[in-house]
Image (cartoon, rainbow, N blue to C red; front, side, top):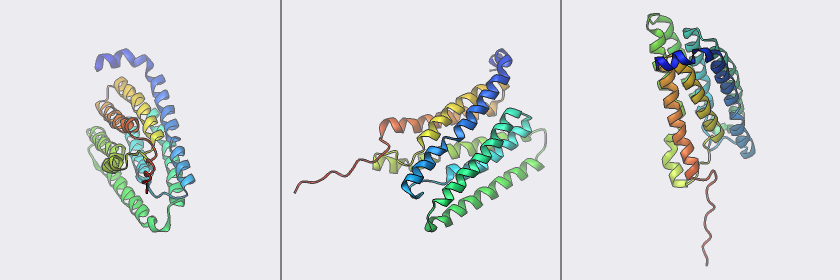
Length: 224
C-alpha cells in the first residue's frame, strides 16, 4: 500500500476535496428517506438510528479528523453534523407520541456513549490515541451501517426492502470508495479498513434491492 500511496501523493488534495464534497452530497440522500416519511405521514416502519446514530458517529469522526490534523475530514464532518441534526429533528416531528419514548431513549444512549468515547480520547496517551480511537469508530461505523441487516429476517418474510434507505446506502457506497482511496493515499490502515468494510456491508444491502422489490406484493385474492 505504501508504494501506491507514494504514487498518488500528488493527487492527495484533489481526492480529499472530492471525498469531502461527496460526503456532504451523501448527507443529502437522507432527504429521500424524509420524503418517504412525509408521504406516509409517520415514522412507523422507519428506524431513527440512521439519523440519531449518524449524529453521534459524525461527532466522533470529527474528533478523529482533528486528531489526525486532516482538514478534509474535519470540514466534511462539520457540515455532516449540521445536516444530521436537521434530519433527526425532522424524524422527531413525524414520530407519533407512542414512539417518542423510544426515540428519546436512542438519543440519550447515543449522547451518553458519544461523550464517553470523547472523554476517553482526552485521557488516552497521545502517542496511541489516534490509532485506538480510529479502531473504536471503525467498529461503531460498521455497526451503524450494518444495522438495517438486523431486519433481514423480516425483509425475507415480507419479500420487500421497504424501509431500507436505498439512496443513503447507494450514496454511502460511493462515498466509502472515495474515502477508501483517500485512506490509501494517507497510508492510514484505519481509514482504509473503515471504508473497505463499509463498502462491503453497503454492497450486501444493495444486493437485497436486486432480489426484493421496494414495496411488498399485494395479497393475492382468493376466488370464492
